[in-house]
Amino acid sequence: MAMLIRTHPCMTVLYSTRRATLSELPALKPTKEASSARTDISDLPGFASFATANPRHISPGTVARELYRYVADLDLLVCGPQYWFYYGVDGRPETKFTLEIALPVQGKIPTALLPYFKRIPAFRCLTSRYEGPWEGMAAAYAGMMQYITDNQLKMNGVYAESFLHIDFDDPAGQITEIQIGLV
Image (cartoon, rainbow, N blue to C red; front, side, top):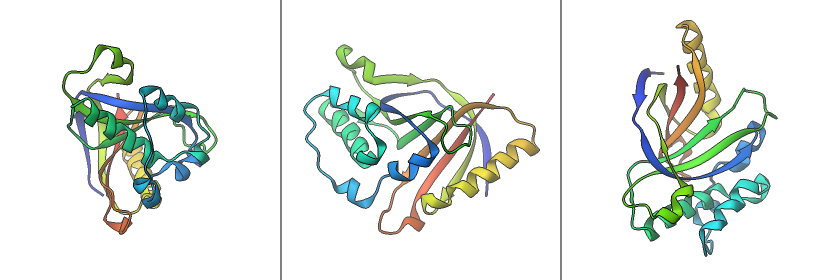
């Protein structure tokens, strides 16, 4: 597994956030059914449902779809893949952490909608490209953590996954860039 230490550039994102645990993540990953689900999005407060909903009753494929619809409705440009940011993860299955699903965007953001956007500053990270079904990513994370230990690197508590290619029909063809923030 090839790894690279780099600085991820800053980016403006439209995002949705919620509290989650590692044990809830399998229920949060998009599914083929969720990706084809249609939802009626009437206004931005609908984002709040993601932040407070029981994860077993939500569909993150729907959350990503909502983000893309808002970007289209606002005539913004999606300028990168969907990201999942994890803040406060400690490896224990029941520890609550903050999950943000984000889309990098460019364009004129209406002032009234600024609370749904933020600028993610540039950050130094260890990256690795993972190819295959998401269920196998734990081994990739373990290899990255070993690299961090072996090279006496210090983490900053930010973990991110950038979904470069999602393929529900052939999960072996999925491509995810894993990023572990470094000091």
